[in-house]
Length: 352
Ligand code: 5AD
Ligand code: SF4
Image 1 (tube, rainbow, N blue to C red):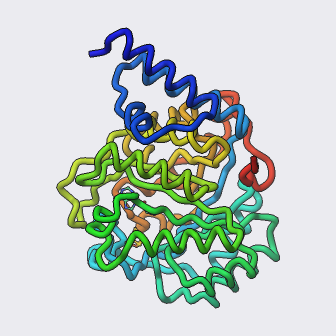
Image 2 (image 1 turned 90 degrees about the vertical axis):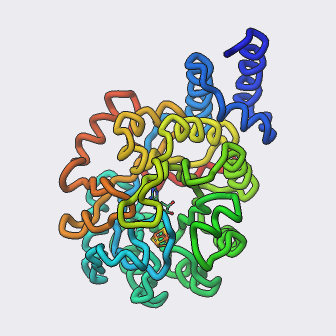
């Protein structure tokens, strides 16, 4: 039910958000709660204009290598969790990882993302060797997505040549976080994100949408936390239940809510780099494309070798790689068909 005055208020709110005047918590909640299709469309269009104004039309590609699916943690939502005995575990060799990065460097990606569970077999020293080899042999920017590490190790990664780091905060609701990630605390994760910022990493945060018990207020807190921490990159995807985890029976997140989160995040954070996540595509393939008109400007093709990719099963249906279901040329052609050129260079955040 939408009265005219409510519609005008919403229009006014979207206009103010578009100008960059910032949004208070109740305003964010209001925008995330919109369900009138015309208003939702107006929200998306405003986010799309801000995306164009603040980060341009270019889509930046980041090539992902999922180099180990071992994890010492036991997050209840994740298929890589320690207690999932059904998963076939793999670790790539150091040389294999570097070779894979050399392959990425031949294509259109300016960045490689080294991603894995928290695997103790990859010591800081070993990771530093891989980072410096990639930096010595390619022009790629190196992004790490390897979970929580002590300050000294993060510093070593930075010194070895890594310049970006993705560490989703998962949810800004501390008690929800703690119920989903046994034995871990949200405050420690945020502390680690602060270390990353202090060390000069371009830092990625992010959350899942549709976690059991998560409210729209929690989602507003996610956006406000990422704004407060000045996240440079922001990954937002739906929760997708995995059959071999304790959350198997829970419903998945709502793709439309993810799109609204992307749009409001773009309106609030302006010049951040925001990917259309794989999880969104798994939930609804066309929603991942749609994300490029609701705020997203980054695409992260998976380059994990064929023989390993199916086992990087954070959630079901994820094994979509450039080697099989998603040839990179198709991706590039798609972006060119919607008037979005592929970004040249590293695609770093454009600082205000
Ligand atoms: N559904 C969607 N995203 C998930 N992640 C982990 N498990 C799931 C799931 N079941 C996300 C988390 C993590 C990233 C690597 O994947 O946000 O940080
Ligand atoms: Fe490990 Fe990350 Fe999965 Fe948690 S979400 S179990 S830390 S891979």
